[in-house]
Length: 226
Image 1: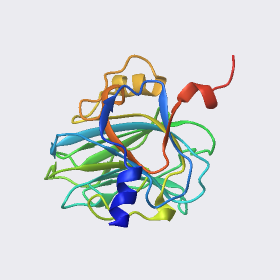
Image 2 (image 1 turned 90 degrees about the horizontal axis):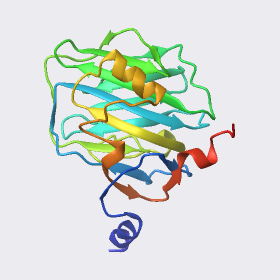
Image 3 (image 1 turned 135 degrees about the vertical axis):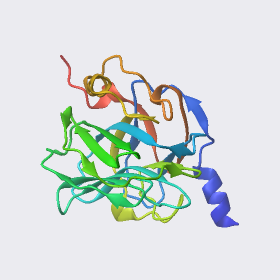
């Protein structure tokens, strides 16, 4: 009963909100604090996921975690600090991308695309495209998704590990159920007038926070004066 009461105290009710100009701040290393992003969609034959993050972590950490009842890493965007690589996981299969300049204490914009028909995944890191690599093909990502920021799911909505948690700031999380054109991805990178996500839309986000997570003005704390 005590555990239930604690959970109810720290979990804010789900709400739909325009987070334009807002960042979510994850100030503590913890195995509990996270943001759950909600969508009614349960079938993905193609996806594009874009997000911006700011951290000084030198260890592994999750940037985006979507789990289904079948795959704990339905879609996972993960930084592997040991190998210094960004790892997109699709349906529990991963690709490895090295050579990106993932500097601490600055904003990084990352977009990931995947198509079930070809099985190909591609990253866009601060406007720079990666090679296209094979991860998984022949089947869609299906089932009720649980989408988490701040933690990596080792089970559907659960089994978080402190040493894989995210500490820092996140903003502009969007997800589409199709592959964005190169021009649209570049617009996102340049923060110009891009088409918002039709699965997750930062400007109309249905989400729920658990633990010590702050909503702050993105430009008030890390933007330099002209």
